[in-house]
Image 1 (cartoon, rainbow, N blue to C red):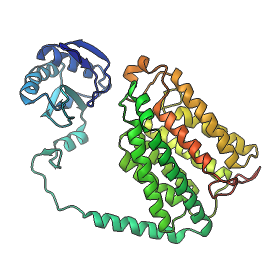
Image 2 (cartoon, rainbow, N blue to C red):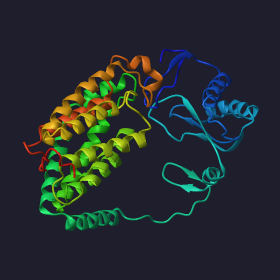
Image 3 (cartoon, rainbow, N blue to C red):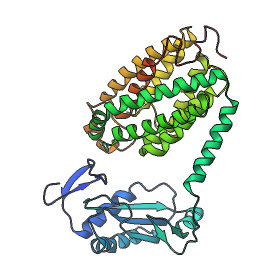
Length: 383
């Protein structure tokens, strides 16, 4: 930021803000924060609020409490009752100056949890009872037992599908690693700039989990679900959770018996699409990964119903997804980190749609003429 100015809406890692303003006094800053947050108060939310005034790393407690002196007065003037406020450094980034104000309107249940003691490495409140935790080795053993049980249910065809799925995921991880910088660049235009890094971390973890599942003898469904679990756990960010849900939904539909036909593959992809809509609260046209996944799903469905072998239909639908991802450059983001900078985003494709199209094309490239180890189905065969 230029000397004497302040960014409104900057991300904690320096992501672009909504506007630049002259540096205000502490009281003026407090009013800006309170007015901005209270403008989005939910209807009928009541008058009790949990409040966090957070220092981002280089703005220390003395300054924060000066700001809090005015924030607390302004909240009371609005008729709000502040419940056990937190003022301090709770979420920080190296050498990041500034602060953030968070309000959560409370009902009886939320207030009970807000007041409850907590004892974690990053946050402590009151006197919480703790135990020694569960050793990681116990979790690892439990995961291994689950894979062993799943492998016992799989037949040879399903194991063949699992091996092919693992190969496709490994190829995806390689492609995303090569594209990391470009995905980060387009994400940084109006977002966090970390999409490439998150996709690399998630896809690598997914590929490794898939390989472990294959070694245990798991079928395609279990391989996909194991990969989805690790993608969600390791990627970080919203996209990691959405990719985890996508793989989990497809895996649940495919299962661990036999080779899925085209109709089953389509149903799995549509289940994944529905899971992303449910979790992400987005829709086609919002400039998200759905703007590539929606046309892909519809085109794949139509082609399979028209009798195309599903691997051939997948390849064609992946081209549709690639074109749709490029077309997101003309859209304005309606959800996510890029929404406040919608105008800046126009002219640049959505990073999530772009990476999804890359992955769909990579799966297409990994297929044999009969698919990644699965059957093709036939016209009229939609079991």
